Structure formats: C-alpha cells, structure tokens
Length: 154
Image (cartoon, rainbow, N blue to C red):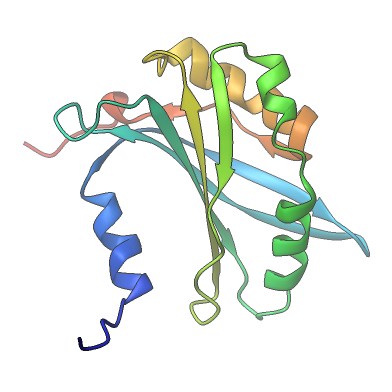
C-alpha cells in the first residue's frame, strides 16, 4: 500500500471551515528578558451540524516580525498548566493545546481546544476568559469583540 502524505498546513486550514468565529480579543504576553508579545485570540465554536461534542477553540495569532519570539512563545505556552482552567470553570472537561505548526510566516499560531460538558459558549463565558487567561496563563486579554456585533457590508 502506498504511503499517504499528510499536509498539516492544509489540514489546519481545513479545520477552520468546520468552525464559526464567535469573538476575538487583543492579547499581550510578557516573556523572559523583558520581552513583550502581542496579538489576537480568536474564539470559535464548531458549526452546529458538524459536531456533537462541545468545545471552543482559542486560536492565538501573535506577531513575530523579526522571527525571534516564536521559540520563547512556544516555551511559555508549553509550560502553562492548562488544567488550572478546569478548577476555575466546572463546565470545562479538558484543555488540549494543539502542536505549534508554522515557523515561516512571521506570526506565531497556536490553537488551544477547550472541551466542555455543555454548549456554554455565551457572551458571559467569553467575557470571563480574559481574567482566566491572565490568572492561568499570564496572558492579558482586552475586552472581547463579538462577531455578531461587527458591522457588515450590505
């Protein structure tokens, strides 16, 4: 049987077709050696017809224009005890950090999947994510912008 080659970048991009953006917020992260990273966190949920599981996806997009932050960012994300979120929010079943994929774009991209007991993706739930990320992960999150509130071109 022939070897099947899997294109991880394509698989990653295809996963976005199965999710709906719910909200996003600006983030800031302090790293060792007085370095600061900033970017965006996109909050998505599975499209209702695509999944019978309850989860949300946090996609961190952090600027690394000079290519020197990715390693420090990845080390920081890998050291976070994501299980601490479970103790703060009883509806969280598990937190699964996905592997860091791209090292060539000038942007650090990392997804964190949060599995829930029920469909709890509501505005109050997303609003509490900022303080939870600050306490658990050292990530300062600004006030969320909800996708449904964004102006639309007619």
